[in-house]
Length: 315
Image (cartoon, rainbow, N blue to C red; front, side, top):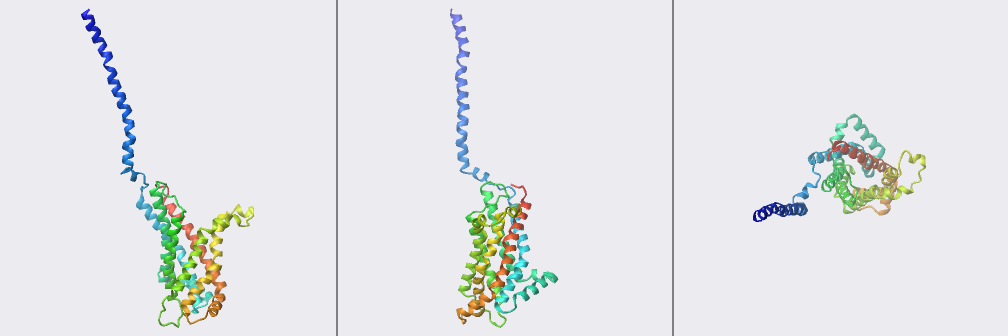
């Protein structure tokens, strides 16, 4: 009986002892997954947060932003330089608009280096390259922080405010320098740009930027396009070109008035100023419409395509 009890006890021990071991293993196997989210939540508030950024090939992407912006700026700068110079020389009486345009275009064809390496070209190149670069850099920063593909673009309020701020501030610098370079020949001493001229230039640029970014989506559904036309050109594309061009009919008088305030100072009455603005309104509006197409149409398309081709499928 004792031997049998002992054997029975020893037989029961292997059957009775394993369950606690199995229970411990089960408890461990259950506790490990329960602890994993806790460890991940702790690391997600620390170093894991940076792992969620799309920083792949970031230096190359930033270099692509600069290369695309510079390519677009170099492409549109010659035509804009010629037109801006012609408008200002015509307003100051230094040269008629048509003659100024012919002279500048002839120089561009026969001696392009003299225009490309000139100060007016550099100013135009600075304005539009900086504008495109600001838009590109914001897209890269946004795609990096939100962990999106590198070629992702944005169209929100921050991008509008940044690009318009850069374009307007540098545009005022450019316009003030153009007014001094191509102002009246008779002024031996260069005048100081009056604050009213800066205000008119800023209002002019605000209208153009509003018509380029905000107005097209509003007027696109209202355009009277036939179905045949819409097969080839979308309403959005038409609105993107028409809105900034049409606004020049309203903003050009502000531009001409600002130039007249600088060219003739405060010694001229408002009636005489209005006569001067009305005289140059038509041709100057047409010239500014022509500069809008490369500035906000062709340049934007070239910038986007060059940037996309350089970045490719990276990120």
